[in-house]
Length: 322
Ligand SMILES: Cc1cc2nc3c(=O)[nH]c(=O)nc-3n(C[C@H](O)[C@H](O)[C@H](O)COP(=O)(O)OP(=O)(O)OC[C@H]3O[C@@H](n4cnc5c(N)ncnc54)[C@H](O)[C@@H]3O)c2cc1C
Image 1 (tube, rainbow, N blue to C red):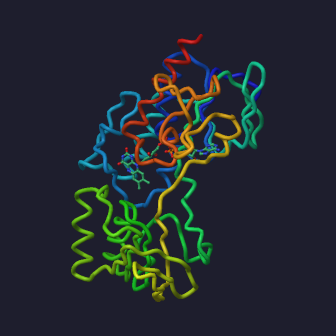
Image 2: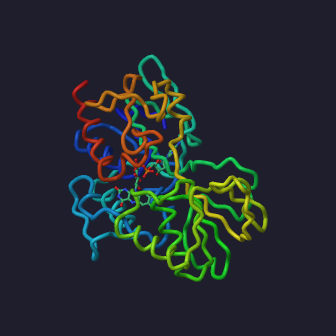
């Protein structure tokens, strides 16, 4: 634990792993620390999910990613990133959460339950998936409410409210409907997001049109009760809908705690760390970001396809400083 690494990479998601590969190739001493298993976020994605991206756009380290279908599944992705980590013999410390970062005169100290590690540079690649955007309404903490959707099977003949209007909400609503749940989608805007993938949106709109899925648009959930949700529509009238389960799929945001601890400047609106676009170095010399954390709350701007490219830029910058 007392080794002084050249670089500590926090987060073993696609962006953190891509950075680790570049560190390995560049001969740097490094360690990737993740609070969960490898590609922890992907492990928590819906079991039935398929990526929107074709496999080559998810590749890291130049290792080909093949899948039987045009869009790889979650399982394909989990296998791929695990094999890549093995291929490059990446140094990973899993199930160890970074709880604090301290700035010393020469080194940074990275604190985890396993101890204190020191390093010259840090790459924050902690993503966003652990922190759902809360509705902050009464009843949100009831056990029937989840901010993550995993599988449809346990919701057969149940009244399920899906709150949200983007891809995750659309996919969950369709899947739940197709597995026998009575689904109501509640969306605060008048129309469903044009960002919903082109092969998903017509399916959702057609199911709503034919009445298979109920939709409340221009509407917000103002309260969740044990047996109901209270929905406020455009007329400002509160309607009480009978309900058994709620999926609040209203997006996620990065953990600002570590960002704050490092003392780096952030954009006031997006909370994205302010970086040198050529290096991804933050306002704290020696601290870099990689992957979706670089977009702050705008996490639909950086995903695997583009976030996987940050690692090379960052490691090149670290190497050029040596
Ligand atoms: C359902 C779904 C489908 C998607 N499909 C696509 C797609 O088809 N194509 C695409 O390009 N993108 C897709 N995305 C987006 C993509 O998954 C994310 O952009 C991507 O995971 C971001 O990668 P990352 O490495 O930056 O962060 P993450 O993959 O989120 O990795 C961050 C890691 O940091 C770890 N971590 C966090 N805090 C700490 C801490 N304090 N200490 C230690 N470890 C910590 C986490 O455990 C996690 O493993 C999808 C997202 C979702 C939710």
